[in-house]
Length: 224
Image (cartoon, rainbow, N blue to C red; front, top):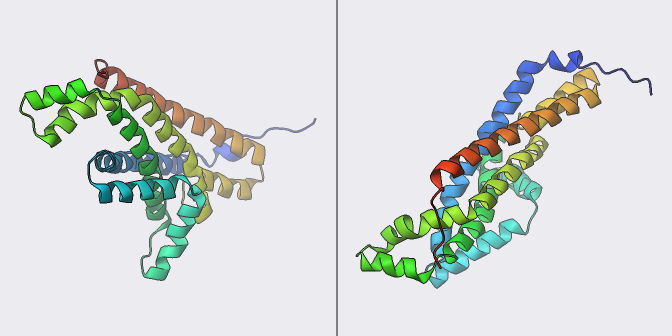
């Protein structure tokens, strides 16, 4: 093997790589916040007594979880213009990621809510709390504490799946890497660098999630 690595050919494009990493971070963080917000609302409906709401949310979750993320992305980016809705690659990517992560997170949060013991609900009612107060003050904190590791794993998985957005030319890290590869023809070096960058980004998210979990859910317990 006489291959000579030339990382300088790749690192000269570091501004583009950093910009791609920033777009990846933006899309991932944005979809996580929006997706979790939607998931909390849907999980509340999913565990309510509303049969119509339960059916609607369940259908949404099953459709998203049982179809490929790439197909969802292409449907949004190439399909919505037929209905007069045109989105930029970044907007389409953010929407697709939000929809996908919200569906998976809904089921995770639902499982956490259903793990709460009846005793805590009775205690909330005994204090005279309203149903929404019971949900947000009594049920949600320990429920999120119970499923927090699963949620963070799902979010990191979505971060790594953002590489699929290169299919619609969203200028995230993988798309930038492909462009650099086409200019330098140094495929091994390009994707080794991007490999390390993805690892660094996911490790950063994992560290931040660990800090949040340590300080926010330190005393969260699930009542039985």
